[in-house]
Image 1 (cartoon, helix red, strand yellow):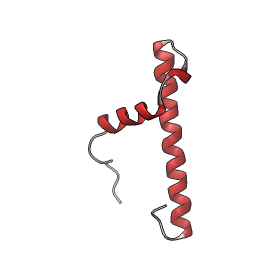
Image 2 (cartoon, helix red, strand yellow):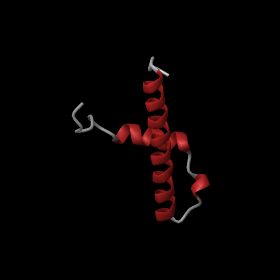
Image 3 (cartoon, rainbow, N blue to C red):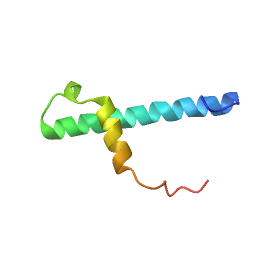
Image 4 (cartoon, one colour):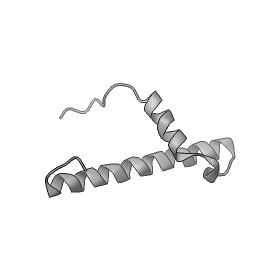
Length: 62
């Protein structure tokens, strides 16, 4: 973990878990739409697609 304090490590772990859940949810929705088994979709390829299509930064002020 990059964070140094216990509170920030806790926050970073939750962030990783939420991103993992969001990617899995995206995979399931895509599989349902294409009428295929979700287990046939690669997690790594999905992460690469998300990285390519996500542009800029979030419009959330610090």
